[in-house]
Image (cartoon, rainbow, N blue to C red):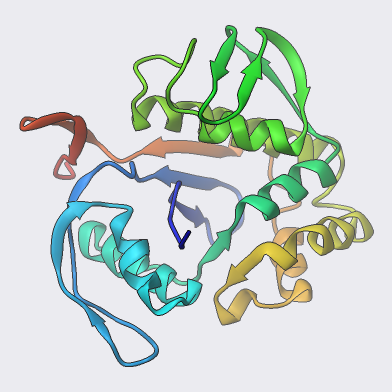
Length: 241
């Protein structure tokens, strides 16, 4: 029914391409969202609300780029980290990328069931296809899913992304240009990117620059947080040390 953000990751590539850090921003964080200017000249009002509202405020113009821009402005104002580029992946793109990899092998720690997310998986090592992977990433409430918090879901999402990195490496995706082009062709119809990444050759070049990367060189983080006193279902970010 509209444009909404389920997951936001800030990705850092070291200049020498020897490491990658991905930081998760909980969608249920109570934060200050600055005023955002949209491409049509309209502006959103500043607000103190949930983090993922930034994407929705920008998207009121109907533009995914405006949605990303407001999210970027919010991240920059909260972290003072300069964001150079963005990639927005919709559900169809996520499913397509997982399927293009032949699924993602992952160890499920316990039975999980979520009618809301249409998830039903058994404990054990298995390969998730695209549809099941998106259900695993989206599921929040149900059986075997912990306390139903967004923080718990972030843990599963990071586990899934780590498994995806290992699968990409096992397929030699970052060293085989032909396989990489095929993979990106399956995905780019469902991607919205900043201009510097807005072509398959540019994405291929970026990916190939990471061909020496190992799974151990990829680190997942979550912004420091604590429960919001007025509503423990939401969180607030802790000041950086």
